[in-house]
Image (spheres, each protein chain N blue to C red):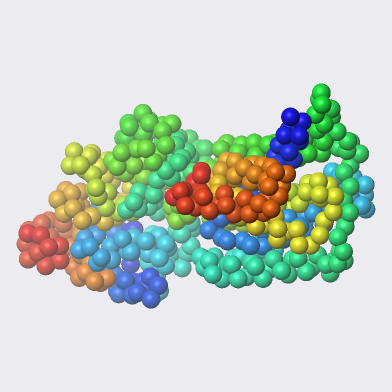
Length: 235
Length: 286
């Protein structure tokens, strides 16, 4: 399967702190690739580095074969990457409609079709169309954030901890949504909740202390108790 | 009663002039997280440009256009040369914009001379209306109406246009706006230029109101605008309007009834707000 995104030996500093100390990662087209690791391992920084929010100090990031590590964030987004941050990044005093409108790049039929698609996928957004984003529940905010990234015709969605702070029943809906979005887009997922990660992920990459330590098929990790215990503290 | 109405109208007009200065400042503060102490300098350049153009052409409209053009050019230059290199560093912003404020003030003296200039009210805005015993000065009413029109126009742009939507989103979360593919630095530049033009417009309206313009007036009004932004809440336009009217009225009434407190009242208002609601009365973000 073709690699849509490839990171090679990426190093990132935040201030004077050397957070990513050699991350290698690939996301294959049409798959859900999950970044796993303990708190503070560097998973969120990896996504922010891909998006240029914490630019890489060294190393290479290729998207569809083209280097993006030197591009500014808005250019990276426009090259076809959608980002759903850990805190969802909802514009709290803007309505659901306005949150969607900020993300719209044009008024084309294709955009309208994508908006209709996400409104069918997340009917709550339609229901609360005129409600402020800040007044939505955690699950609804997650859905709005995913919808906003998707309507930009993103060929790669970077989703950071979508299950964080959500009730189990809502997590079930998020899992369904990711399965559905996977039909249209490749997904890179950062997830602390291994149960969820194992349900949606095709491949995994384990990050520890800012370095890639293992990568493989999700089935392999599910069976490997030692690896889960060592790097995720579970098992 | 007529005295109260006159003090009220006077305070409202002063408040509107402060609002024109504070409107740009609050958006620049809220969106760009930039502490621009040179904003008053743009106001005073607008005032001098307007007086100079009015003297040369005898046209109030051209005077306004001259001020707006000055604001746009100075806004562009300030953002590119002074502000852009210090994004994200408040200490450097304070130092460099304070320094630039002094440069702008001194440059006024170099270009227009060290003395204050007299500024006249155009004939069609001179004089007053009499309603019963109350005499309302036309130019003050013009400033009040203009202030509300400008507020409505900015609100329309912010609420009904895509660029306005992006500015509102940017005030809340700049990183997310960029991650949605929007070139936020371009938005910063446009916002800064618009803010500078508004400040210069305020200066242009101020000149006939005060009758004279002088280089240091930018500093005086700049401080008032900062107080208004703090009271109203960072990034909130309605907050700035409310706070500007409050400051204008408080100053006007105090100047009449307790003159010794007329300068201190704004600081007292700001201190009260900071104690009980540090994010400001209408903060766009906490």
